[in-house]
Structure formats: C-alpha cells, structure tokens
Amino acid sequence: MLAWLVPRTQSSTAEREVGSRPQLGAVGIIPARLHSTRLPDKPLQDLGGAPLIVRVLERARSSASIRDVWVATDSERIVEAVEAAGGKAILTKREHPSGLDRVAEAVRLLDVPGTDPDAVFVNIQGDEPFVSTEGLDRMVALFDRPQVHMATIAAPFSNRDDVEDPNRVKVVVDDAGRALYFSRAAIPTGYGPAMEPLLHVGVYAYRRRTLLQLASLPPCPLERAERLEQLRALWYGIRVDVAVGDYASMGIDTPGDLAEARARWEERRSGT
Figure 1 (cartoon, helix red, strand yellow):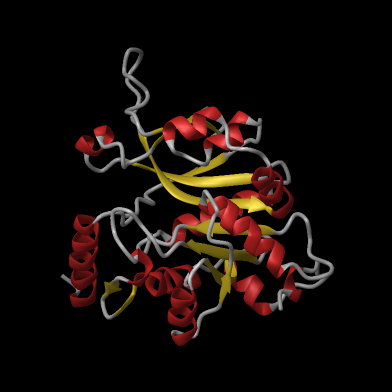
Figure 2: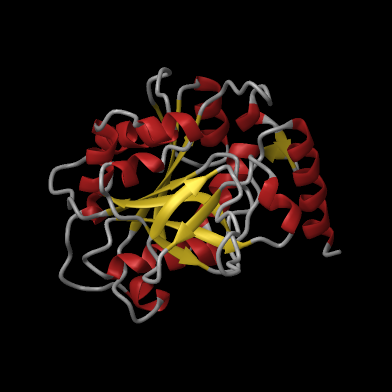
C-alpha cells in the first residue's frame, strides 16, 4: 500500500520533474474530527458543491511533493464522503486530544514492512481548503537537510488587525528560521526594535520517528495554556524549522469563516 516509502535506488521520471532536489515522496495525512463546538459537522459542510474535507483532499493532492494522501477520521460518514470522491480514508479512535495524535495513529495503522523511519509525513488541517501548495512544497523541501526533523509554514500578516485576533496564531523565529515560540497573543510585544509578526499556518511535516516520538509525549503546560499542540515540540526540545513566504491560508472554525470561504470559492471559480 505504501511500498514507495521503502528506500529506492533510482529516481522515477515523475520525481525528476518535481525539481533537482531528491524527491522525498511525502505522505499527506488530513486529520478530521466530525464534531466541532463552533461549527457542527464541519468536515461535511458544503463548499462549492463538495464537502469541506474533500476540498482539502483535492488541494493536498495538487502539491508536487505529496505523493499520497489519506484522511484520518473518527467518523464513518467522513470515510464515506472521502471514498465517494475517490479518496482514501482510515478510521481512528474518537478520543484523540489533538490532530497530532490522530495523525500518529494513522501512520501506525498504515505502516508496512520496510517503512523508512526518516520518511516524511505532512499533517494538513482538515479545515484548510486554501492551503498554499507552494508552501507545502517549500516545507517538504526543508527535509533535504538531514538535521530537519519537523517543519511548519508561516506568512506575513496581510491585515494588521489580525495580529490581535487570538484565532490567528503567531510565531517568532530565530535568525536560522527556527521557531522560538507560538502564541495566540500578539508577539513580539513591540518593546524592542520593530519586528513584523508572522502568521502561523497550521500545517506540519515530520520525519516518521519524530512524529511518533512527539505523539508519545504527554501534553505540556504551555500547550494546554495556549491550546497549541506545536508547543509540545518546543517544550521537549524538538526543533521546528519554518518555511516563510507568501503562504497565508484560511482556516474554517466558525459559521462566519464558512461563509467567507464560500464567497472566496465562488470568486475563484468565476475568476473575479
């Protein structure tokens, strides 16, 4: 099923077309939980004539660096919607506290003999139908360097007012492009020299061994305080590299977000 994860000695034509860098053949995993407090049945909400989760799946498939995509879900209804659209889905436990834990279970369930422990898996949020494929490819390209074990995406804010919005997560990076901290608060505070904040785009990539290690660790105090699972990595000393560029996306958490997403979808379809 995932036999291509076994290390290969030759590059295929499709791999060479992606670019000069070695093709890692990343696997995309989209965690999707049916129940949402702010938007009931969120993955199954209609977006342009198809369920939201299907639109995210289609977007992930269009990334040149992702060679296979699975939806990991707690719902038979989501499995049926994905499979009806020609996608692949796998049932996972309902009680997972985070998308990270659901992705880790899916990776374990999909394991085949010979799976490379350094294989790259991409965690794509199930409510990001506009995620930047360029950003995904840039993030996966970071793994050309063996010292990269986990990575994510960030973008400049296009609207300064969004910096104060706790639903827009901020990230601070160091000079080498590694994450120093993530927060729902407006960071940095601005007491020092001017520094433009970065919007964190909630997409992650991990080497398989790092993903499973991270999922085996208990949630940390900062993670609970900020309600941000990526802080678990920093708490336990796992470096997070950040691909920064014009990769801003739009997560869907509320009915208002869904209405905005539908309007944006229609604009793109009509070319306006």
